Length: 496
Ligand code: ATP
Image (cartoon, rainbow, N blue to C red; front, side, top):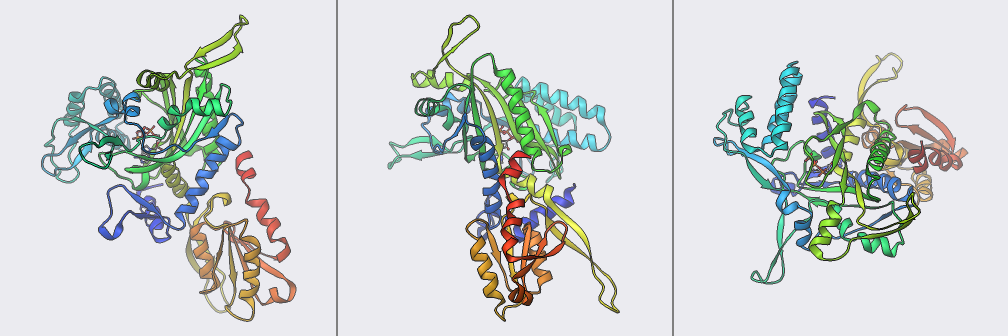
């Protein structure tokens, strides 16, 4: 995969109604995007794949939908007001702002690309050390020593490195004077922590158990780039797993592996994933690992798995004055109940938008197709763009295409569509030559096309065309459901 592929994926997203820049008629808004008619379907399906795997497939995990706004004390307790910041640096000539750590990471990638692996390793070590010590001066020194220049001005005229808090704030209250400053949540996790006892008590949950949630999160990213990879408004899918203290290493390993298996089931190739252990841990973490995906611009974080200890629940207990304890009636090896304690937490946190981007990058293909030669004419080579999405994720599962717009063919096609549309998202189209219509469905990732022709009127059969093989088969109308059910099933995706 390369930058070239990435550009193609981005323009495909726009051209085929997957992703649009936000408020585009006003020239867009930095790092904010809208999902179009096909994007919203794919995104819903990806969310459902996660929800089913986490909630439906685990008896001890339940869902939650907490609000975006939370009491401001939440963010004091969680450490976000004091600790949720990135080191930023400005170029004095271009006035452009950068994340200091990202400038250095880009330099490391460039060293690696140029075969300067010793320099790359050394810089990585220096960077880790500076981040770990929160040494902003050293970050600036590294930028100077490694002669990093601004991409716009080309100069190395830098300001000092400063910390920049990533939370968006707004006011709640009718009058400016009595307004309270509140924040747009930078992660969904805190909504889970503050509801921990509500869910545990009303759901009669026994440890170990999990609470899962999907929803919007907001971060005022210093620089936003790479399309929907780094957005200021994005969606997270998080699960907090509450455990008995002392069992965290075993559950951390369990969820690391479980999440990797979930990714691999999508069939995008195991070699495109890797674990990356964190050196600099977030303020809440005891151990943390990323699952990275091989995007066209390199391996980058898609999901994080964090061992958060009792950091969050304990802080909420301290700040709210409310007990966050669980009573464990199970017996330890001495036959004594474990009793009251604040549970430890393992978190799995994935960005839905990054998953969406990974899915498109993995499934975007350009095939060379040879069109059969007509008598006396030369063979024609053509390229087709196809999204080889797992059928369950495809925006449309089946396209119903009457060959002509007359002779009763649309009526038969509509009948088929009416039968299928309660169970499958169907696309109906009668305009254009059939070849052109097939290509359009390929570009959307529709796994099946059903074509109704004149023979269909006589023998109640249709042509089914398979997206990936482009094979066409004649089948009775009565068999369509059976074929679709075989291929389009959550069971297939979740259990393989
Ligand atoms: P990064 O280092 O890339 O900024 P992070 O380590 O801050 O990410 P987490 O706080 O662990 O990210 O958030 C969990 C997940 O949320 C990430 O793995 C990612 O998929 C997603 N995520 C975080 N920030 C963004 C963003 N700005 N845009 C889109 N997705 C994001």
